[in-house]
Image (cartoon, rainbow, N blue to C red):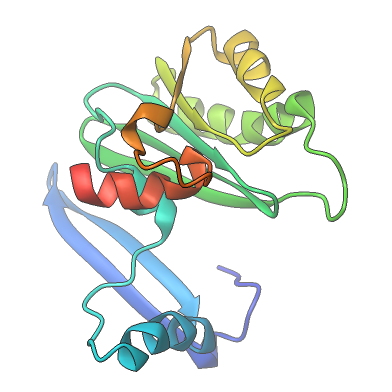
Length: 182
């Protein structure tokens, strides 16, 4: 219904699939200028970009979506969450993290809680698994999410899945790992 940018200057992509007598639609909207920034890197290198996918959607590639699973990816600026169940994306949400503030696990869990309740109320299912990727400082979120959901929290991307000792946290490469393995 509402976007934090002018829809007149946006790019839209969607995927529609028949599902249970209806149509399941996943739509992505991005400011056109931001999309052009991503695409320009490829153009400058002599390539034509094929698909630009939000890193969280790409990170869902290896996630088992047969049972209700909450996937949370936290970086310094945003917390992005998705809930997958019955082999489909059921919920996707990005929350702005406090600017210049510390990432407190319990506060992040409270922000995620509203989405858990929405999912449970609208789909009649409870999250059974949690996959979590965090940057430094947000580790206490795992304990808070375990307490909230009763589900064991697993890493979104294991450090062992990212080889080469680049020094880049595995969480920041979750979209790449997911796109390549999913």
